[in-house]
Length: 459
Image (cartoon, rainbow, N blue to C red; front, side, top):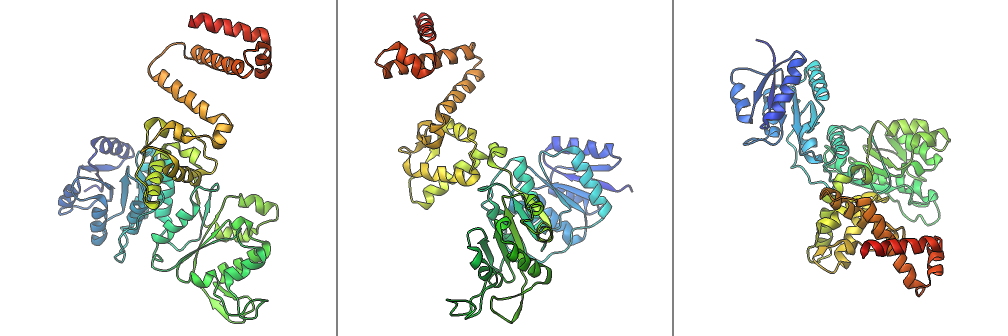
């Protein structure tokens, strides 16, 4: 009998296009719309590989994966349109060969099947694990799905990970997710921002010190490596670490042992390192500010977090979450975003990324007067100073006008702009046209002509 690829998915369209792509690649395919059908077929045959959706009527795909693992059947590739850290990590922990986030590229799916067939590996047996933790990382966009997939794939390993991304993108949240989805989850997670500690104190913070090691050292103090024993040490802003400490850190990573400051006892450690930076480490290496050998030790696996402006589709989800969380934490009445306000929030660039969005939502939870956040509640600040608020309103108006199929949108917008500016300038100069023209930076004749044109159209 020809080896078959089995597809289990309750979405007929997904089954059809995936099956056709696999058949075009020369593979035999059998389709199922639920896990129950797979279980029935397993009484008589075994697949060369199973592709299973996570959410299906009845038993889900993860349960099916666990059953196949117990029987030594595989490999198994998991598919889902609901990608998050917990689901992705659970799939890999149960022995999935790969994880495909829907919608996926068919060529990539076929390549994943061929890789898994070449490996020939059935799901590996694994010890029962604790219930999957919930994670603060949120997102449904393609960039975040890739982040979740990487976290799920590498969490169970002991490989060092380098998390990169702009300030405020959530690098510590990634580090915590890596720890919570690993076998070290029952051990400490210790975080240290290396840029926040003065360089003369950083060595003691990392490695601890003995009594009398320096002025004021009256007792032995354990450093972060000892505190994180058996667990995970998160080193934030690693790119700012002084060169002399980079050398000491490299020795620990290479040999798994260190001395406390002022100490003679060699201490062995079992710690996984997750480092993070917003800087370009390769550029710092080229400038002689970071050791190349340390970078290679840290950058075994890299997870790059996208800026918020690159995943705008996630902003409404995050904003609603942060607003609800702030109300609960601060013991305030629950609030919600009006549709127009949420659109305006999603159009902002947020240079401070997720952290800036969270701060905005906390502020709105406190100061917005009603139970519904309106566009006017988004307020001034830096955005208003740059003209962001009125351009947001203009963008909203233009979006609605285009959706309604209205005509002469550009001309009407220019007319409204001219009329508003001219009247405000005249009010500010007590009706003096020359002074109003000077204030606006236009000639008096231009102002008179625009005023006349405006009155003609409005008359």
